Image (cartoon, rainbow, N blue to C red; front, side, top):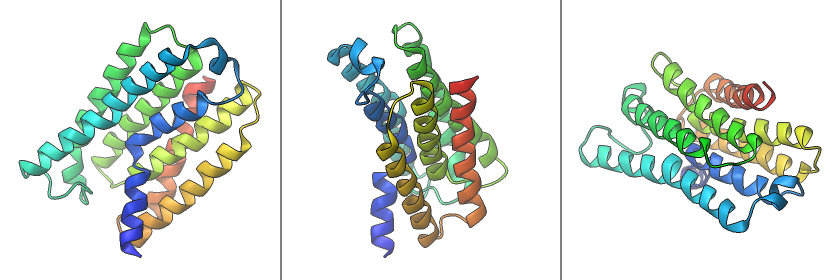
Length: 201
């Protein structure tokens, strides 16, 4: 059971949520899918994957080798401080690079929401261990709901998938005893709110 929970937690890592979100958005029946050339969409996905997942993951691996953290799971608040801080830096860098990329505002705002959620995860973690996994998947759910309403498109299957993913990931974090129920629920709510704020306001 715990092995399965670890695999699922890894597959739906919070840092992968921006990439998953972009893949969904770029495959919807909306103007975004039609006005952007395939090459540009792939370039944006590659950039976001590199700066929000690959590089932060590589840094965490280095921190593990240097014994700054005890494991990649970062079970304690203290272990998460440096990786979270560096992740914030790379998310902000992503926004800087996308600012002049001439992309639809809704895409840029989606990444702003992801950046805001990472910043809040870092700040909250200084005092309390919140679930980054649930912030990530909560952000995906919130973004998909907002985008479906803003663009007036039918993406209910994606939203249902994201909700099922949220339930599954949350259950896995509880099975692994990585978080309490309050840390799970509050993490999810924080993720949803971050996307609502940035996509609507």
